[in-house]
Figure 1 (cartoon, rainbow, N blue to C red):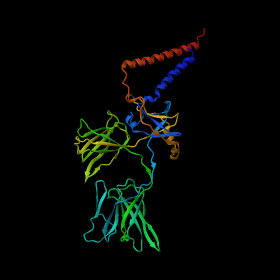
Figure 2: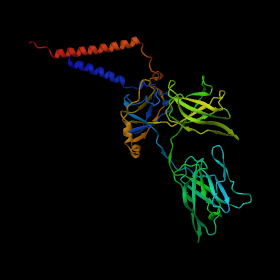
Figure 3: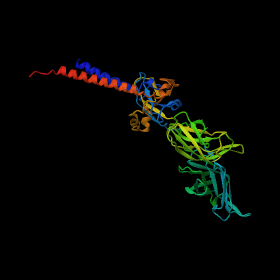
Figure 4: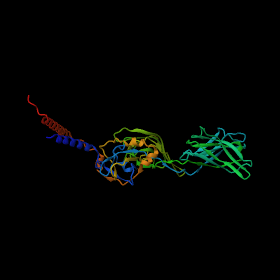
Length: 460
């Protein structure tokens, strides 16, 4: 046998082995076609729900991108970018005048503030004022607890201005619990001056970017003749958060523990917020919420606290969503510690909140591209795209990356790819090793024979 034939045989065996390790589209259960318009060096899509429902790995390591002829394309997974948004409309804040004795300049400590179950102020009463005592408004309490974002300024309105007008410094303090207060703005000037047909009014108070639930505005004695009629919260233009999806998962009472409930979310959703709802009219309990990626993995606690669902005066009240680590676990469990533990007749519902990840890939090869997913035998790829994207600043990234759309999911290799093949029987394993060993011996014999043909022994 010639050397070229042996070399060709060796290269052929190596190529066949290499090809066997490179995944093909049909190695995956499902896929979606990427619809691109124009040209770009990088394309970005948002992963659809079907990827989380059929991915085999919690880290989505069994996702791949292929070009039109089935060649692998480098990609990376990431979080969606914040989108620029306009400033929200101003909001009129609930305000409550805080009275003090006429001779006092402060509201004092004897103050009763009544709030509802969500912390919204209902009323504010000073206990330091005796019946018949003359009073003055020494401050205004502002409730900002219901705002979704912190305001960047306040705009005040008042209904009466003294003939001489006023130029008065005021201060704003803030609190999260109505007990501990800290200075937010010190000695900002309010002004309302009118002279010769000219008017100078300054009613804005700029606020630092600090998230607080309550504000208290001082109202000095120089403003005794001025009544505050309204305060508007204004907001700066900012980035809009990405769209959040919610998935409801019906609980099932655990067979072994009557105060535990199990939830199978049916996929590896990247949930970072959770909340509970109860079909019964009123339920309140303290529980521990745990999760795990597979039925055989140990449970890990993600949150312990109060869950409730109540009806008050016909208005439904429920506990807020809580933040948990976004591990993408499929299985969840609620262990009830106290409260209304007997919920067998109406099992709780787990709600998972998540933001879909983005997939950015290099425009190698020819479109259409396919995002394939669902392979029980594959691990995560090593991609150079992460280093590339991290080296780009925001402006360069926006110029290089274009958004693409996805088609409806379709079957590739089918649901059989979601489960690993059954283990080989021992005799099959030994037969396979025997075949491989025989091939190695034959190849070694052929190489030795070729060597002897090319180097014949010389006579002495």
